[in-house]
Amino acid sequence: MRNAVVTGWGKCVPPGVLSNADLETITDTSDEWITTRTGIEERRISHVETSDMAAVAGLRALAAAGLEPGDLDMILVATCTPDRLVPSAASLVQHKMGAEGAAAMDLNAACSGFIFGLVTAQQMIAAGGFDRIAVIGAEKLHYFIDFTDRSTSVLFGDGAGAVIVEASEEDGGVRSFDLGTDGSAADILCVPASGTEGAPTTDRRTVIQMEGPEVFRRAVAAMGDASTRVVEAAGLGLDDVDLLIPHQANIRIIDATARRLRLDPAKVFVNIASYGNTSAATIPIAIAEAVEQGRITPGANIVLAAFGGGLTWAAALLRWGARVEPLGESDADLPESHATGLELMQPNVDLYGKGI
Ligand code: UT7
Image (cartoon, rainbow, N blue to C red; front, side, top):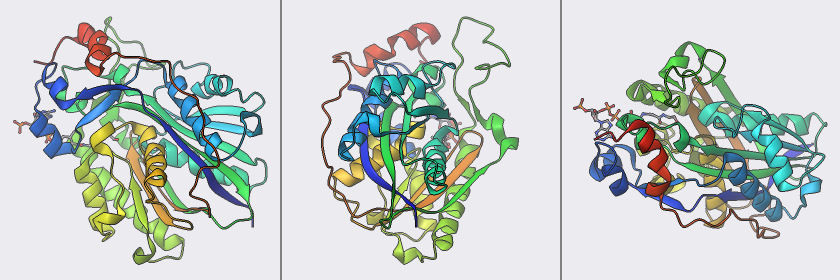
């Protein structure tokens, strides 16, 4: 059987930290509200573009797989914050990685994008057309944040994560998946006037708008149901699940999803406190950290689950391969920056004003 096994993993988070205490100085919020209502303590603010973070994460994943950039035949970048509409972020990433010859394209399923990308890669490999695909989730969400809107400004952060998926006879890869979209709810989480429907009518940038409580309600149901379905579809029971790696949007959504799966909290990977919601990047960043921390063991059954703008939802049962040690390390890194998160946010604050 032609499997599509994850053989490399990597992440790239920018150095600028924006803490909840920093946010208290630019919007009407409190550390206490943010930590208790979301689980977020700080997030990263990028001094570079989405494709820069994506390329570094991709090169680190390639090194972990023991591969060279020229070995890739496809680069899939899941993002809703590409550097430009045209060309794709993936095009820029291909050049920055030095992966000339690899086909490259973006995929936008908002926060569910990485799982959509992983399943796409698995299907392309299983069909025989491709052998080695980099699946990258990367976002520079802070660009689209209005600090006068405290219901969004405390949630999002920047970063990138990547995996390498390779054709293999070895057991492993996506065993089952459940992807879905409810386009009738498109307006409850969106960035209006960001495409052909029109530019913003003022000199303000277009920004993320969200009906948080409604998204929350739907997220808990969609992630829980999709996760249950992929476990069943893989012919497994809930006891067979070794680790849940959920989209990191809100600790209360993660806890509710874990409860629906009746999972021991020790089997749930959570890093939301450090990065907040990095949309398509949360799951690949979490995969990279979970391997580094020894939370993923050879042959582990991992449930990935996400939801996001669209509204999209996605879950996959990913069986890990035999190797949890990286084959190599990359010295790729972002250009140095000593700017604080607050300093990097200043252009947004100048544009929108403070929310206090
Ligand atoms: O990846 C997909 C992206 N989307 C999401 O993950 C969103 C999912 N939704 C959520 O995570 C939650 O709905 C939020 C975190 C956005 C909001 O939490 P909530 O518990 O649903 O709060 P709420 O919107 O119902 O607001 C409760 C109160 C309100 O005050 P009043 O009317 O009770 O006086 C809000 O004005 O909390 C207030 N509030 C805040 N207070 C301090 C809302 N945001 C903040 C804030 N700081 N940042």
